[in-house]
Image 1 (tube, rainbow, N blue to C red):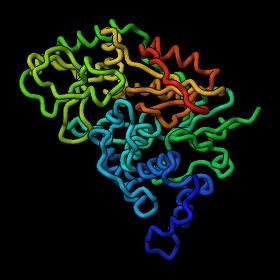
Image 2: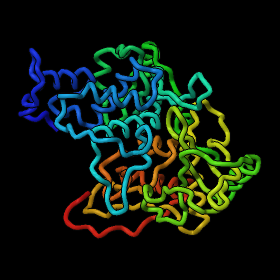
Image 3: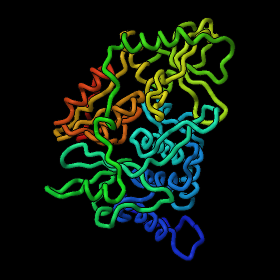
Image 4: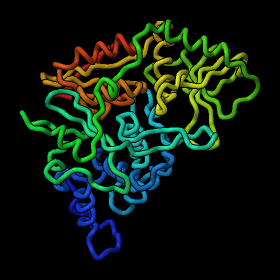
Length: 401
């Protein structure tokens, strides 16, 4: 999207016009100001990476508000509104049955931060105190060669220093929140990246899924951990995922415990930072057992949300109302678009960032577009590792998606 001709009418006093500052800002991010503006997903991702390079370690809320202040007066969307994606802008609470509301700029920045954490640009690590809070860091300059012809770039340098020479910067392809370089035949790009301080991350580590197990096996592990987690009394700010509610309306599944009894995926407030994820037992609305997620903290950046989402997938599959995905049937095309109604663990999202790209959702939580040649592998992930089933497609009216 090009910069609007009347962007200078936003009225920011400066010796340079707003249009000039806008274009310079986009160019500084390594993007083409004639092709996109600062509200594009690629630009917002670049701003987040640049801001965290100066702020880290920082809380997600601090990062979000810093990016928003930098955009003040430079974008047309001034109706920022309050974040409605959950505490600290967690994207998993977005969406509504039948329709996803238009996101405010604050919500889009929050969603981008979460995408960059899942992608690996940002590291979410425990704080140095005992508060249970987690802080964001910029990953060191890293590359992942996912195929003979494509290298994905992660992280960056502190204080916003540029670590790529101009000729390589010009070759970086920005696709939504991802960055990649396509290799020329027989060139020694990997050696050049190492010489400029990049760390090579093996693709099997970056894309590694959890060990394959059935829904019963995953739920069994959670139940054994819950058996050792005896607790009593009130748990502040507790909400639970109600498995009896529609799996195609994620936001509507979150509710207060009420007088419910049973085992649930839950979130609970903490004084600082994002809510904590748990698996717990309720008896008449009172917590009797509780196990924090993730159950096994093998890696310091292991996220409770990833295990919680997969655990809920297992619960829904065993209850015979599995979570769904929808394939858009469109006019003849080389691509297939898949709509999702609930969040997914980051190992799956990274794989889909490689195989496809995020696109605008259609009455869903989020969506990805894949080449038809890749979709059989995607479908195996959905059905065998995430236990999703396909929702009856909506009828197509008109052209391609």
